[in-house]
Amino acid sequence: MMSSPAVLFVCLGNICRSPLAEAAFRVECERRDLEVGVDSAGTGDWHVGQPPDVRAQAVARRHGVDISRYRARQVCEEDFIRFTHVVALDTDNLADLQALAPPDATAQLSLLLDHVPGRAGEPVADPYFGAADGFDVTWADVTAGAAELARQLGED
Ligand code: 4NP
Image 1 (tube, rainbow, N blue to C red):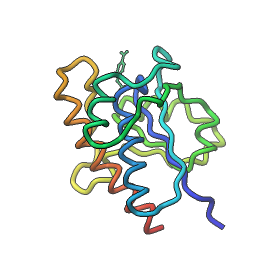
Image 2: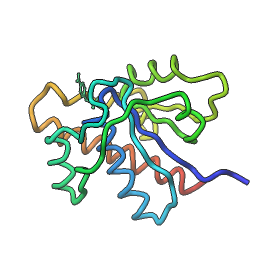
Image 3: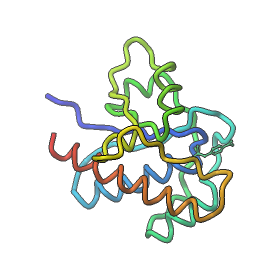
């Protein structure tokens, strides 16, 4: 029997992009009535234990999702076994994950926008040091990726 899917979204800090990807993906799974485990993590440890950036919380809230209780954590080797899919937000994150993956990793590694037709190889840009409206771009990108990933998992 196939184990049920579980998806981990990974960015650098786990306070901007990957919590938004997690939120968007939860919405998509609910909409499609899919039972999928979901979490997010960062490759870095600077923000461990912190809630998402207030700008990320605000854009999620504008789209009807409360992410204020999410807390940042760092990705670990066990994640490559516990999750069926580990999804990087940008190509640096993907390279870091490839380096970190243990030899017995079972998760499929991918880049989020690889799941979106015509957008393979594109990163979800880091909005942390930019203007607040950068988070609207982040939301649009993670929603596009989350919708396609949920659709693909729903077909499996
Ligand atoms: P994230 O954004 O990777 O989308 O969570 C960042 C958050 C914090 C930092 C960089 C990116 N930082 O350098 O602290």
